[in-house]
Amino acid sequence: MSTGVTHPNLDDWNTVCCFFRLPQLFSTCVAFSLVADMGIWRGNIGNWSMSIWCFCFAVTLIIVTVKFFDFESHFPLFWYNLSITYACYAAILCLLASVVYSITHVQFLPDGPLRDRATAATTLSCIASAFYAMDAFVWNYYWPEDIPCYVYALPALLKVLETFVAGVIFAFLSNTSLYLHQPALEWCVAVYSICFIPTALAMLLKLGDWENILPVPFPIFQLGLTLLSVLLYISALVLWLLYQFYEEFGGQPQWSSDISCIDDLICTWIQRLAVAVLTAINLLIYVADLVYWARQVSIGTEDSPGTSDPLWSQEVSSLSSVIF
Image (cartoon, rainbow, N blue to C red; front, side):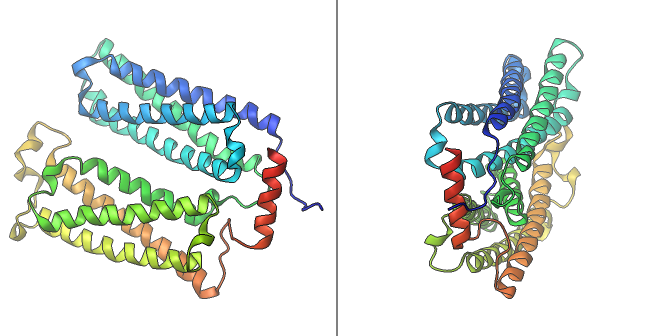
């Protein structure tokens, strides 16, 4: 019996995949290679940017390999949702690496071959970001209109932002001198981890259409999880501000009070401020997420893609069988 599902043109889609994935591999690989060959002139920011490009290259290569050997036929819907989600993350990561590397490192290099290499790497990172972004959004033209895609829904985009901002916070917290001297600040670090793990788990459940394994309806689970995250982030923001920027609690209220800022653009005080700003941003994202799920629970329905009703399950099964 026909379900009325419209299926993508896989020949066209495979062509599109090659068009985007190959430039992604080329751009990230060459950017990584250019900076790796700079030796001691790479700097800490260069090493950080290299790790991003290397990660994106490796994951993209895995995706291409899985597609080439047709391994995704074993978990079709999860794989396609995962690919879109990864493309979103990679686009943001490469863009972030381009901006941070150019602002904090490239402009301070002397004119010559080293600066040319760094500039070329930054340009390639921007190109990779553009191809990842196009890769993420081109799915709109090949994904069947009557099969909902979770990644393009508002809650999924909020989850992507929540986990991404948390990841940037973790990058700053790699400098353990920011928090190890004070138990209250260690609590802030614990909050970031406590909120990150369930958020990533919720994304994974939705990407794989596994939310039925939960003992409670998924909207209620999300509402409780997001409410807890909001409360925890409020405590983290308050404690971080108090213990980092108020002298009464041992903080440094002014940039000039940190002598390391004289010679280092990304000094300890700037890192403290960055974590505070990112915490506030993530709190706002969690609040928006909370409002969304409160509305879903209040109206008694979940109008985001991926709802686990019989029609959805039937369409997913049909999509899987026809595509693969």
